[in-house]
Length: 85
Ligand SMILES: [Zn+2]
Image (cartoon, rainbow, N blue to C red; front, top):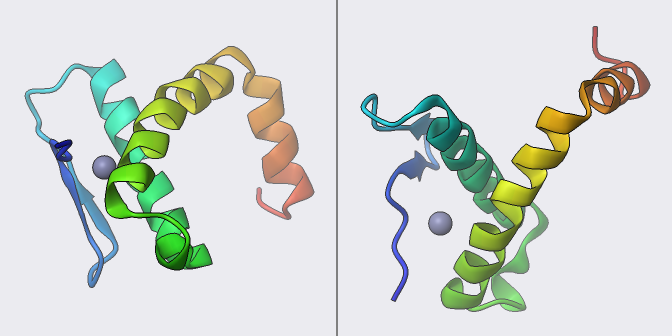
């Protein structure tokens, strides 16, 4: 059984991380919890069991962190395209 090491509090929309984690682990944890929030937002609970969601999120989070870290121009482009600053 897989269990999140940190948690996202759904009512307050806060992601609580262990301050003892290394920066790279914090990035992975935040992405992990953001992906869970995205799953909640798009309503995947009807299609995915919690174990399947956890497995998908665990595999996607480090890949997305790596993609964003390696492609800062992509981040800027998304921000600009989405109307951010
Ligand atoms: Zn999780």
